[in-house]
Amino acid sequence: PRFAFFFILFSLANCGLPATSGFVGEFMVILGAVKFNFWIGLLAATALILGAAYSLWLAKRVIFGAVTNHHVAELVDLNKREFLILGLLAIATMVMGLYPAIITDSIQTSVTDLLQHVAVSKIN
Image 1 (tube, rainbow, N blue to C red):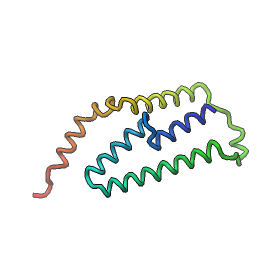
Image 2: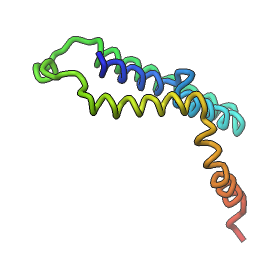
Image 3: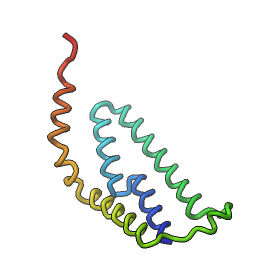
Image 4: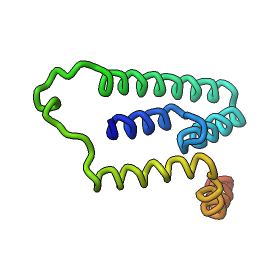
């Protein structure tokens, strides 16, 4: 059940569940794509919806599906080390979803410089 919890949490974060890092990332991608061109934004949103559907289908089959391989049936749940590592990743996923400024503020200067560099024509 511990592995299943983390698997479902990360799958839902991949789907863009609010308060997870996936939501922030998907929101920023769609917002930027729509600002550039509505149809590209619609295409990006469609791709994200298809990705979420696949993630949920995968979680349903892996976690809630029937065990068809005897090697899988012999597996045990997470040990303490694995639980600690996945727990830290889950905390990071939630922190970045609740307060994304930790990351976005630290990369703002680099992104601004990159955008200025790209805006300059290379053709003379």
